[in-house]
Image 1 (cartoon, one colour):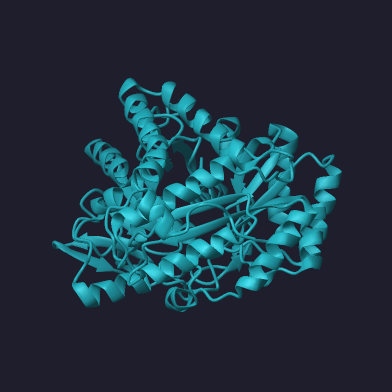
Image 2: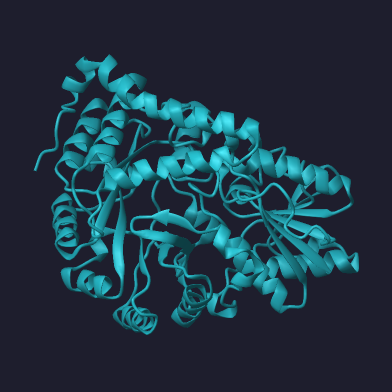
Length: 490
């Protein structure tokens, strides 16, 4: 049986700004190949054409890792089904949208949790022409009603295999980041031990489960030796290695001539100066901290407690070691007030970060905030296609806070400007601002190599965002003064 595994196109995002191939797709493709299935991986963020034109699929699995991929997934699924191919949807967006009325309008099944073992059993059921009712972890339509089968337990990741990167053209997935010219997204764990109010990761992936470090190192060996990879951005929800794992990473890096560096997202409260030193020695050169808010009340509301003094200490320690630090903030939380936002501004200004990544709050189904707002105002999604339009952290499509839209836009514009013009040097002796400017140029180049319509809309999006920064900063000087948007405070 031949299976086509697809990453749908994410709106107008090309490989310059999105995960080239999602981890769940590659883990599932590798798993199915080990069990004798013919597999073909089609990343539509890279090419709109099927990579193997002679591949004849019996079934297709589309991995909806990003909300902006829903419309493309629907269009591709409709074409495949018209050709008699059974279509399965998987990954986070499909899982959180499975209960919506039209979720199964474009596919035959949705994998509602674990993907590898569920896909294996479902595909065998399809091949046998048997009833899918006994397959755990799926949703499908029967007699006009959506049926959810018994939930399948999430497996220990040691039951899976190291990813087979020969299934794709790895070189087309590389991107530039920091000093890296050939950086790729990998992962060392799946899931998260926390339960932030805005995040659906616990609902979709459960608690944190680590991959065997031997699997990770085996993949690094292949990617560095055979493809020239020089950077890894770990896509873990919480990147945290033990001392023994760091020692193995360090040994791997030395064995490969110290030819790669790495980084990822973690939390300051799990780091110590000694651990940071070990991370640096093992090749860590950048970290992302999801700080979200500077208001203690909002941190409690968001379910993300931390000590601001500890964040400053960890950030300063990273700078001393040569680890670049990116701070991620969210503005426009439900019930956020002007005073909450002022505290966030002051807190961000007090940190010596390499980049200040301010995003608008977006509502995501199956999160504590979604349930809260649904109870208070009746707000809810009615179609899975809505995800493609409203779940965009760069666009203020819905404001759930008590702060005016313009104030949120001015604050975001200020920190975008601060990131671009930031003169702090990173571990690679380059300013973070130049990195983000270079990223915009690379993204524009990718658009120009695409179809004329995509190039036009993509370049328009870049220009609109680029001109939005000076517009909001120059057009509303009163709001800049009101929120103290003048200079960093240390």
